[in-house]
Length: 348
View 1: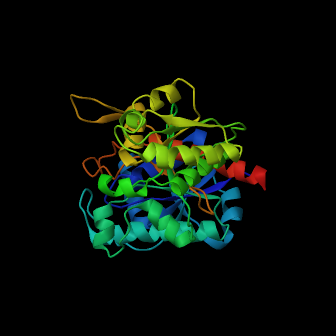
View 2 (view 1 turned 90 degrees about the horizontal axis):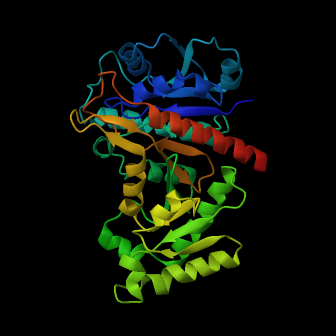
């Protein structure tokens, strides 16, 4: 049976509900998984009008989800209703505590259903961090919410595009703080999670490249000592554990080498070191209109007891409610979650 993937629709004021339905209506997605939206009836009904998708929303119950999905009509868009909003109870493009709380409740529900085995994985739509915190939920993002509610202790963010895969040693932290976080044990754990993730995706002999932290990998100690004291010892321990890992490689060339096929994944030391090359590969913008013509890429949290992937972009308040949102990243996230679910099933 195809894996059942729950899509948390994100902040109702953003593009999440729209790209959720667009992706669920994609035939190629229906061939690899059974998607179900986790959200709110009124929000999804409005998104259906905006997208003009010629399918119908069908509410489903979590306690009979597998059986219901197996017998759905072809034009059905199944969803689990959290019953949060009344008609027009939100405003597109506006930071709002009510929307922040709704997005949070959708995520919690998705996590609960995955932990209970009702869902084979969770794919998340974009949330607004300001709205989330205004609602009293003081998390810096999805990754931290999933770690908290699944009890995960060692977890990392992975970004993928069709050309590049990156895992981060640190993510949402200032550069000043990152200097104190680039430590041997943390780097070693990240390398191990990179190896595990690649095997889950069907790569039997993964090759991992580790980026340096300082310019030119510190040039023999001229520009810092993190490479010698922390990164190299972590790489050596990973090699002893049987992992094929190379580095540290100068940060200004490691991604070029990965694009050339030298590595299956790059270990980046901090947020922007990994995000910038990934988004350069997956995002394209029309300079005249300012609109993104391509938004491919997937954000994945690894090290959790459940599968979680996500779009690799934000709520895009500037186009929310217009029907113009690009669902490419959501489709990519569903494909990756389906592949990981199949990989996990094979390894059991």
